[in-house]
Image (cartoon, rainbow, N blue to C red; front, side, top):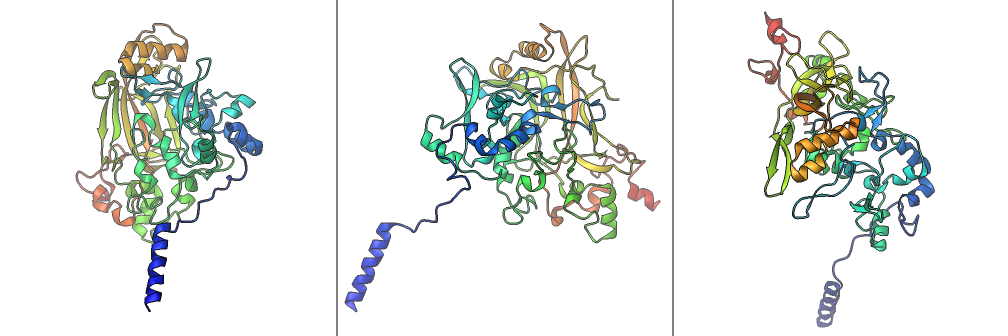
Amino acid sequence: MKAATTLLVALVVISLAAGPVSAAKKTYSHQEYFEHYEGTATCLECHEQEATDFFHSQHYQWRGEAPNVINADGRMLGKFNTMNDFCTNPLPSWIGNAANEDGKVIAQGCSKCHAGLGLKPESKISRAQLENIDCLICHASGYRRDAFQDENGAWEWRPILWKNQRGLDSVSKRITQPRRKSCLRCHSGAGGGPNYKRGDLEYVLGETTSDYDVHMGTDGQDMTCADCHGGTRHRMRGRGADLAGTDNPDQPLACTTCHDAAPHGVVVLDRHAERVDCTVCHIPDFARTDPTDMIRDWSVPKHHPKAKKWSATITFGQNVVPEYAWWGGDSRLSPMGEKVKTDDDGVVPIMVPVGKRKDKSSKIYAFKVHRARLPVLQEERWLVPIAVDEFFIDGDMEKAVHEGAESAYGLHEAEYEWVDTVRWMGIFHGVRPAGQALQCLDCHREGGRMDWRALGYKKDPLLDAMD
């Protein structure tokens, strides 16, 4: 008995000394395919067709066909030739380390969220353009990059491990399909900070619960972005109301792509679903974790002493109730290089949904309505982009507007003034379960969330039916 006890103690000691049993080492699909990662050329050895497909996509070109923009007039539209009311346009602010007075980098240009290595995309395919594609930014778990200058002073994106071949080889072999966190890295951080731009794309969606989002909750369906948005040949599905280009017009995306048009089994609810989009009831509010940018006034520079940088004056909102409008799938924008037109309130519509109550193809949708003040040329009345990276450093708005006018139109010392603008942005993420959806009286009561007159009704249609 004593010998047995001694043996048992000895085994325990040996086990503790050896440490806990390690889990099986994680494997990746590409870990045996190449020895050393030597840039995109390594990927092209097997994936030139995929790279060619991606070259033609909106994720790379940042422009595409615009069949759903009613005043596109057949033009290819996208980030490069339209204005937005956040960082305005990438032309004057493409790549480079903008540093404050302490030498801290405070901006790196719009290409930080472009899936390329620093060259601007060209319409004509070439070897240089294919090798400019950064496959790892979407497909390699743990990959990070930073902006560096080459021997000629040109800026480019390089892996942060570019001097550590062993570490770079390890990261570059962790190839997976894009994960939520990979997509959110750009799509949540767009506009200058977490959730600033979209309002419904929060970093918390990278790992969340079904109560927060019924599709992406890790305790439920655990769906990735590509489960809904993945198309064919690197063409993403879905457009929303405020994107100019449509990457995959032959594969539109809607709730009814997966769900029945009459999903409730309750007559009154299914009748609503004929003219009210699912998002209206199932996304009661947005910006639930991180505040979102609701108003951005570029005409009033704001200094941030702690960060030692400048910005526009931004008004944030949290737990925001959406605004509602009819939308039939088409939109109207204010193109660059054309005289702006104002709506009945004297505001320039940067991008607005097109739809109306009498159009049976239109439904009521939920929107984030973003308002801003942007510069226009005094004579031509064209919208002017702003060289935002330079402005972040010194707060010199006049110089930033002049640089923007030169980059977009070749104009020097342009005269400009300020206009109020509005953009309607569809709300589609953060879908709540049925128990958290809107109830009848959220809309159908005095002081409810619907502006019935704006939607084309004389009054609440429920009350109208009761008269």
